Amino acid sequence: AGVSSMNIFYNDSFFDGNDPDANAADDAAIATDKTHSVYGEHATFANYTSYWHGINGIMVDITDTAQANQLSLADFQFLVGNKPNITSWEVAPAPNMTVRIGGGTDGADRVMFTWANGTLTDEWLQVTVKPTVRTGLTDEVVFFYGNQVGDTGLGNSSTVVLVDSIDRAAVRDNLGSPVAIDSPYDMNRDEAVDETDRTIVTGNPRNFADGLILPTFFID
Image (tube, rainbow, N blue to C red; front, side):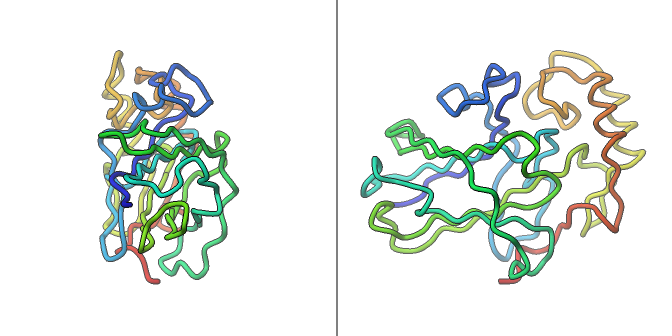
């Protein structure tokens, strides 16, 4: 068994038909420009979303799962925090879990986790896939995704995400529709950059004191 891919997706967005349930429609809502981060890697804009609902959808594809129809939340661990040292992180609220046997890339089993909108915002999520009799893994797989509502990826420092006048101007200068799923200015993922997105950016200012940290992942 092995983990072949890990994705974050925009649940309950235009791209999955504004459907809050976890199903095959969410494959079209995968954030194609985002990738997970791992231990020893410096976090960048590629590793976190700006979605106004926060982190509300994660997918894990497992190949040759030992007991796919028996998988449960006990086979995974979720921690959240915004400090370099993860020993200070907390256990995340339990997600809803859906297993689509054979529904992943190249026939892998796609395990989907969803949280209610707004549950995980402006922080990092650590996901651990455990080596259990049900997953069939021999070693744990650990990865990270983050969220900072309202950020466009512009004007940040090397260590902190800033949401400020640079982001507001970027949204103002890129109004229009339709836009692709990877638009950095579409905060609510409704396929348009408009006044709603400007309001989201304006309403979520972040500075050096309270912005999402961008460390080298992550002191264990």
